[in-house]
Amino acid sequence: MDDVLYPSGAIRDELYLRAETTKGCRSRNIHLTHPKCIAAIHAWLDVRRRREWGISNAGTRRSFLPHSKLMLTHKGRAFEMAVKRRELDSGTKEYRACDALQQTVSRLYRQAGIKLRSRATVGAAH
Image (cartoon, rainbow, N blue to C red):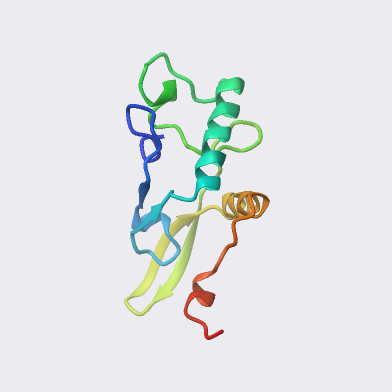
């Protein structure tokens, strides 16, 4: 929640992804500016509040625990991260990833009508 919400509870419009959690082992920024994405985050936070997942008594971050994960499984638990290895020009790099979380987020994007583009198709000729 620290990465997604300001202490005031407002959703950050830019998030920093650490290199150790990205597939290419490079840090990245992502932007939460699409109205449907922002609406989905608000709706998800409402679900978490109703289910009392990761709630604290503090008045910051909408009373969510600062170090709790934004995305949780349908049982309210953190997704499990697996250690993966990727061969880069500079050698083998290890990173942590969660295929189940990636599938969940992709499904949510599709349900919201947000078109996904893979990195492979971004530079492809049309």
